[in-house]
Image 1 (cartoon, rainbow, N blue to C red):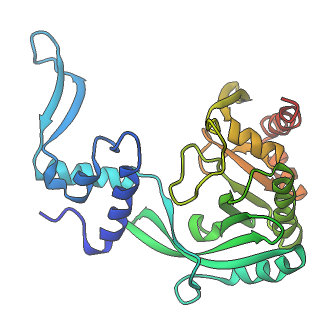
Image 2: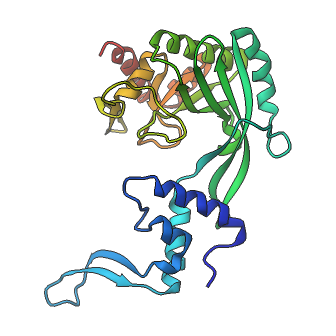
Image 3: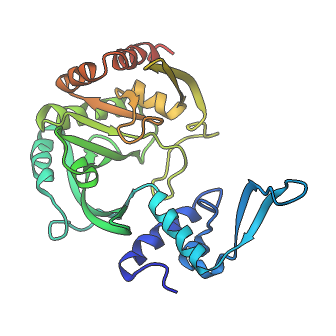
Length: 303
């Protein structure tokens, strides 16, 4: 039985590789080896109660057939969050992906002591009942006065066309020594480049919550970047939403980013740069929620 087509092979392999890097070594009960070769999966674990049993016990391990495997794999491929796989910054993506958004940034960067290097990657996503790869162009910004870099993608490539001009930061990395003042200056330069000069409304990213094997950190001694720094909560429609702010997320707040609910997942936090016009748009969009967000950011810098 064929569990996925030729078009899906590369995308499925990427998912298996990512699952292999997790501490749990599984996703929805599937190991990397089972994702690549579903015939290796013989059982699923069902914790629901069996009322046919005289003692109403848990069902536990249930033997499965090829149809179960196929349905289970389809569910996994649909549920696995979309992600970006970076191929590298050694080649230009002009022949494979849209690069129009890059040219304006490249030209504007020259006056800010920032060099720009084009790159290429894939958006791994579920589309039309298949797990597929879509080619995307990337850009790495290098601060010429430090070891700081920022990797970004135009949001239209990964989220479709929007009424606003949005960019997503994939990584900010400092390959040199920890340097808060230089980092803060670099964040200011990124804001000036993308918001002021290139007209982006929103630039956002997510603080890392685990080590990135291809992006080494410069944390010294005991690494506490992912430990909780503090909690904060927002109230919307009489419901309270609680968030845990990590040390790393708080650091980016101190460096000039605004901590906000994620544009991708309302239960997650993002760190953002935004134009004054976009801030007004958010305040009008949700007048109960966003004043709390901006008030929190003012107070958080004192913590």
